[in-house]
Image (cartoon, rainbow, N blue to C red; front, side):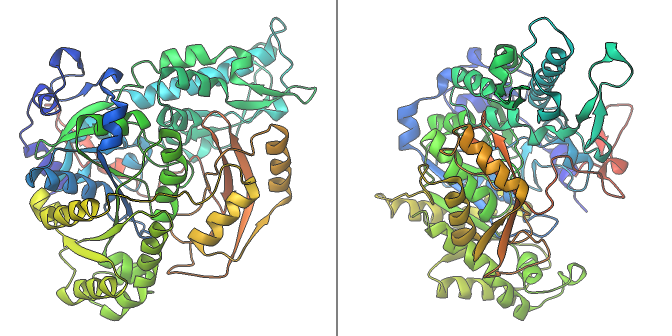
Length: 557
C-alpha cells in the first residue's frame, strides 16, 4: 500500500528557481536553502495586488481526533485551480515537531496532494521554529537576569512573571517547573514552565505582523508581569525587543516550496488554532496574493476556531477578506457527530450521516454571519459509500449550499477540478461581497466573548471564574479592552466540553482565566482544560520514524 512518505520520496521535484519563475520572482532575489527551498524577500509584497487577488479560506466541520484533511484539501484545490488554467498558490502553516513525533504525524498534506520536500518541511525546514524559540527564550533569560542583578534592575516581582520558555517538542514534564535552584549564583527560585513553540506569543506576533517595524513594536508590547509597586512590565522595558527581532530576521521571510504537481506553495508560521489564531503569517498570505490571482489557505480545526479567528483577528490586522470559504467534511466525521463509535466509522451508516449533518450545517451557517459564501468539500475516503455521499449532497442542497465530493489524496488536483470550478463560479458571482466582522473592537471584552459564544458556539450564557474576573479587571487597568479575543477552546465540540458532540444548544461556556497577549494584539479567554505544552501519547509516532545509512527517512506519515 502506498503511503504519504513513499509517494513523496518517489516524486520528481523541480529546482525552486522554476517555481519562482512561475510567480515572476527573479532567481537572484531568492534566499536559497538548498535546491528545493527558498525564502522570498518582502519587497515582492504588493498591497494593490493584494486587494485584487482572491483569497479562498479552507476550514472544516468539527473534526475527529484524526483530523479531516484541511491541509491535503488546500493543496489539492490549489493544484486543481492550476489545472483549470488559473494562477494559484497554496499558503500554509509550518508543521510543529510536537505533533509530528506525537500522535498526528506529518502535516505536509497527503497522497498526491502534498508539499515537498516532505521530510524537510516536517523536520526543521528552514529553521523558523528554532528562531522563534530562541527569541522567546532570550526574553525569558533577560527577565531572570534582571531579577538576579542589582544593576539596571527595574524591580520585577518574580512571582508575577507570566512569561514561559518554549521548545518545539511535546514534553509534559516541563509544563510546570521550578527554576533558579542551586544557590544564589544560579538565579532566583520561582515557579516557571515551558510551552510548545507553536503556542508562543512570539509565534503569534510573527504571524500577525505586516512588516519588520511592526514586528519589533509588537515584540516590545509583550506583557511579562509587574514590578513590586504593581506597575506593568513589558519586553520593551528590558530593551529585549530589538535583539528578539534581530533573531527573527530570516524567520520573518516566507518560505517557497512546491506541491507534488509543481504548484507554488508558500509555507510560513505555525500557531495552534485552539489556543492562538491558527493560521500562517500575514506576510505569507499577502505574498501569495501579490504573486497569484488565487490563494488557497487554511485555518486550523473547525470554522468555530480557526475560521472565526482568521476573520475576526487576522483579517482585521491585515485588511484582507476571503472571497470564499471551503468547509471540509468527511463521512467519518459526520458519523462521529451522529453518535457512531470511533471504531465503527468505516461501516456504512446513512442515518448517522444524516444525524451528524447538524454539525456541518452549523459551520456553514456560521460562515454566513460574515457575508462570505461557502461551499462544502467532501474529502472522500475509500470506505465512503455512494449513498452516504449522496445524503450529504442532498442535505446541503436543501440548505441552499453546494457540496462536491473530491478525491485529492488518490488523484491530486485532478480529483478536485470540478470543485475548483464551483469555487471560481461562486467568487465571480459575488463581486460586491459585503463583509462584516462578528463584533466591533469598541465592544467590551465580555461583549466580544459573549457574541462569539452565542452566535458561533450557540451557548446561552458565559460564566467567569474568580480568576477570570480578576483578569478582566487587569485588562481594563492595562487599557487593553480594545483588543480582539482569541478564545482557547476544545476543537472537538462547539461547547467547552469535548464529549458533547453534534450541534448542542443552550449550554454555558465557562471562562476560567484570560491570558494577555498584548504583543500579539489579542487576549485569550481560556475555557476547559487547554494545554500549551502537550504530552506524547502512549505510542508516539516517533517510535516508527527511522533513517538508514543513505539518509533515507522511513516511518514519517
